Image (cartoon, rainbow, N blue to C red; front, top):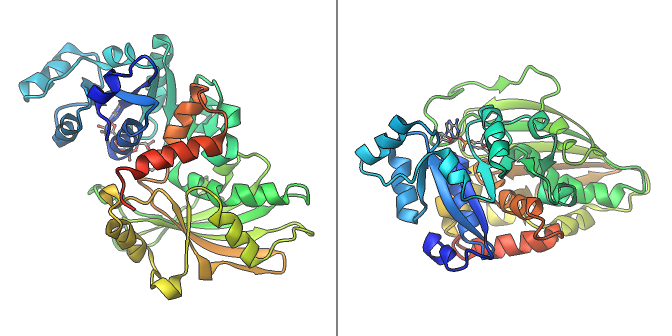
Length: 360
Ligand code: NAD
């Protein structure tokens, strides 16, 4: 892991990154950024002293207060933490800020980033309209090159994009794909005690749900719709996906599996052979191979759950909601800073650096 000391020796060539909101997503993005040799963490913010500050201190990330308010900044010192100032102080040493604040809070922050002249990357809890530009590595890296701000789409949209974009690219000339998906969503993250349901299946009564159509913010030529239900689990989402392929697509179940095996950040395993038949075993696998926090950045596709029947493709995929967007944030930094124009080259760089601290 690279901390600020390693980073400071190369500061002239490193992209300086601040994390505003050091929570579930923020702490993961910070580690992934710090692992890269072309970027450094110059600060992370917390709203007030809490156990999350200990983690930032242990990792060697300079701690800032989310607000510029002197009293709130002083509270960190009173609790025994060295606080380097407020948000403006952090922005003054950043090239790009990753906004990992809770959904819908980011909008207030955008104006502050603009005034500071700092590029910004928001998360999927914000609407596309906030930035007018969204991001996943495979769908539209090129469109984001040199932009001032973007939004890394949600974990669900990122997962859909990973498997649907290569299919769409293959089928484009024949007329493109048409997609229906059912999102079976985890009720809450493992660290959340305030959300539910804990004993119910809760349909999202806004039909279609926003998840499928959100893919069109990164790839507007994919015809897609979705339904969603929340279920009492904390560990992963599952997508049940039906894709209508155009006539003359030339694909088979085997060639689709081969396509995904050659796609970055998609993991294909056979449920019957490996006995990984549910999200519980997928998460156990992530822990077994030593992934930090038990994360799985890859989208997990059950090989034996993929079937092309005529022109209709059926498959299931599982999404680790807290972590699939993490490598996308790193690639998005390179896109905004215009430091790598080829998304596959960025993904390879990101993933090999992360792999050095992240198990097998
Ligand atoms: P979180 O609640 O775990 O962390 C948010 C952090 O931001 C907390 O530390 C909070 O104290 C801090 N914060 C509060 N107000 C703030 C403000 N005004 N400015 C800056 N920081 C502030 O939330 P999270 O799960 O990390 O989600 C962050 C974003 O990522 C949201 O947009 C969310 O929709 C998106 N996202 C979450 C997941 C997931 O599964 N958790 C997956 C993909 C995307």
